[in-house]
Length: 182
Image 1 (cartoon, rainbow, N blue to C red):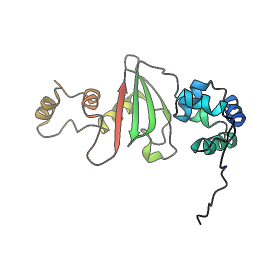
Image 2 (image 1 turned 135 degrees about the horizontal axis):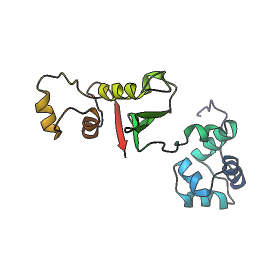
Image 3 (image 1 turned 120 degrees about the horizontal axis):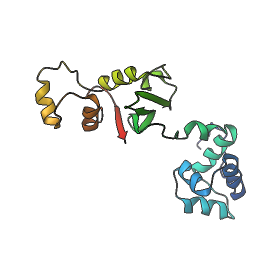
Image 4 (image 1 turned 180 degrees about the vertical axis):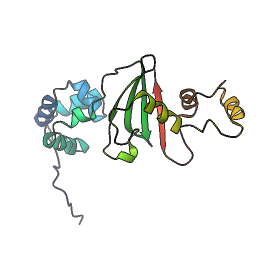
C-alpha cells in the first residue's frame, strides 16, 4: 500500500472551484489561463455535480493558503517597447522591459534563486548594467575571427542584441536563454 506523506485533498467540489476563482477575482477565461487549462475545462469543473479530481485540487488548496500567489505570478504590464524573457531551461526567471531610446530598464524576477536572476541581487539595473548583461550572453567582442562568426550569423557588425536575436543568448556551458519580444 502506498503511504501518502502529504495532507492534500483527494477532490474538490464545483462550488469550491467557483470560490477559489472568486477569491482570485478572475473570470473563467482568466482562471483557465492561470491553471493552464481550457475555458471549457473550467466550465465543466464549475458545472459538475461530481467530485473533481486531479491537480486542480492541490492548486486550489495552494491558492486558499497563499491567495497572493496569482499576483506574484502575474505578468507585469509591458512598460517599454521591448521585452526580454530570460529563461533557465523552460522556466521564466526574469522579465526585462527596455526603452532603448530613453535608456530605461525595468525588471521583474520570478525566482528567489539569485543565480537564476538576470541581474542577481540587483532589482533596479541601470541601462549600462543591462548592456553588460547582453554582452555576457554573447561571445566576446575580442573573439578571434569574430568577423567570420558575424558573417555566419548574417550580422554586419558586433551588436549584442542582434547576436542574441540570432542565437537566443544561448551559451554552450549553460541552460539559460533569451526570447525577445518587440
